[in-house]
Amino acid sequence: MEGLDFKNGNQELPRLAVGVDGVIAVDNIKEACTGDDTSQCEVISYKESGGFIGSLGLGV
Image (cartoon, rainbow, N blue to C red; front, top):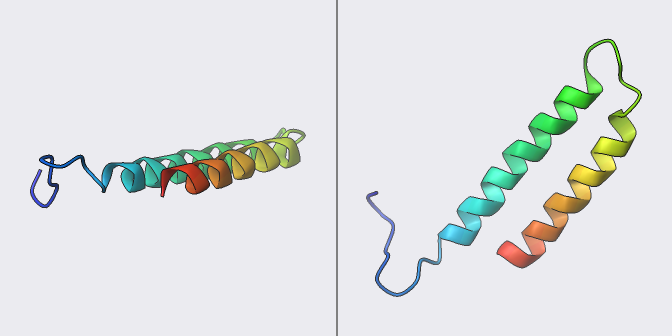
């Protein structure tokens, strides 16, 4: 992959992981909050948001 330096430990990898986590969290929230059954929307939103904030704090 062009632009990623693997010689001295990749500094971009944690940022990439946080980005992927964010995309997955948004998708999970969207899935829980749309459709016929939205009873888990609030619970999933809190869990996914908390998980993303945790990975943001540890990953960057």
